[in-house]
Image (cartoon, rainbow over all chains, first blue to last red; front, side, top):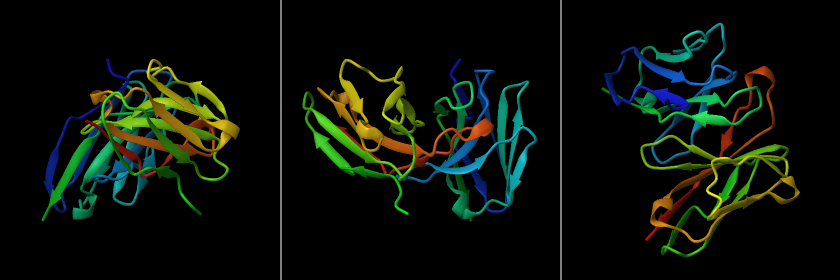
Length: 111
Length: 117
């Protein structure tokens, strides 16, 4: 099993749609979880951290299920500018260990 | 404040040639990462430094790859000799250090796109 696995995508949605991305991780000792966004031919940038209680930032909501080792990202009211690749990121184990990236899920929002 | 600076931006070499990439992290950031990203894939960790110490290099192909971070600031990643399969984007990232329970947030450079012919 890969350390971090994501939905293969791509996701093609119209503006205004709600879309959800899923991610699973293999190491139950992992403690740090993030979603990064990567635009075409650009470097990844932090979108949001994922907390145990779940967290929201505007139209974006992240959830963590430790029992299932599952992370999700929900985007509401999709905008054209949301088109990008979304990378699930998990640390290897205990706090302070290296961050491992998933393959990424590509989102394309159309008008 | 300047971000993570990488050079060169692009590099084209023939196979079996050596190549080196340079990274200058954000000032004060103790942790430095090198990742490799192939087209359509997520970044793959090569090596992580805490100051000048390589604390995780398990994914670095040590037969041809080497890295150093002298004085715990700038870092270089070298490939010698390069192979066709090394064509990828090499990303450097830095972080201020362990961010407590919720770990580190990475700041990436623009990357070096390597093409091996």
